[in-house]
Image 1 (cartoon, rainbow, N blue to C red):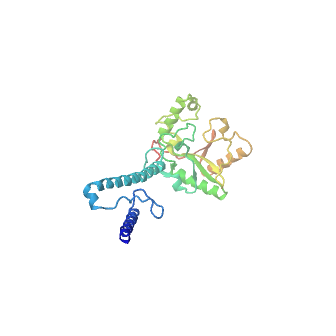
Image 2 (image 1 turned 90 degrees about the vertical axis):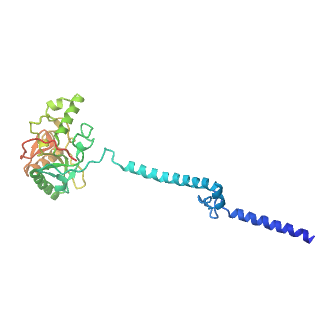
Image 3 (image 1 turned 30 degrees about the vertical axis):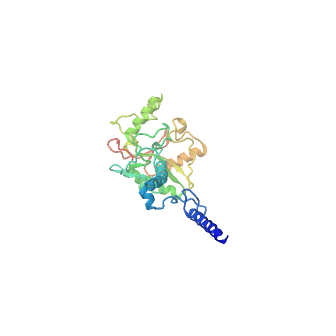
Length: 285
């Protein structure tokens, strides 16, 4: 009886040993002792499997998994790049101002800019031709006078905000096309928009005109009664009362004491006496 029992015990131990070895063998996709699934569970090298050809399918499967993960990373990077890329077309290099001009923001660092024609926030609802960057160029003499205006306002707790300065002639042509296309040729006839004539001097395209308003220490615009580029008698400098008229006259005094001359039909528009001999079509970028 004892001799008959020994083989049974040996067989039982052998079965247990086989089961243990099987549990130690990683299975593809099976969790380990920490409950984690290892993608490397099926990558154990085996000479016999390699010689039989089964190992090749394992390698291909592993490469497929790695490629799938890499594709996910590349996809995320690509989406991030596209999301953060500028939406207004290809990048344009920043050019220096034309000869005799200065960049207003570089020349007067504490001045504020709101270059409307470089955005869709203007009467056309379009970015005007030639405005490839929200920058303001001005003749050196006019910029020097504007710097004095800014210094005077800063002492009083205010600052200038620039809507427009030098304007390429192509932008004025854009305005005219918009007016004709939208049945507003009267804006040109009534003088609200300039006529396109390269032989005629235009203050903005000559670089000696600027459109401005005043903001307080918190950056809030003073109430001028109308928005910039308002087409109507309400924008006439003297056509206002109360605080609105006081604000317009305050701006007018500050600008004119430094040599600028106000335009009576637009409270925001000021010319500087010195004018070059022709208009320019230099793009702003």
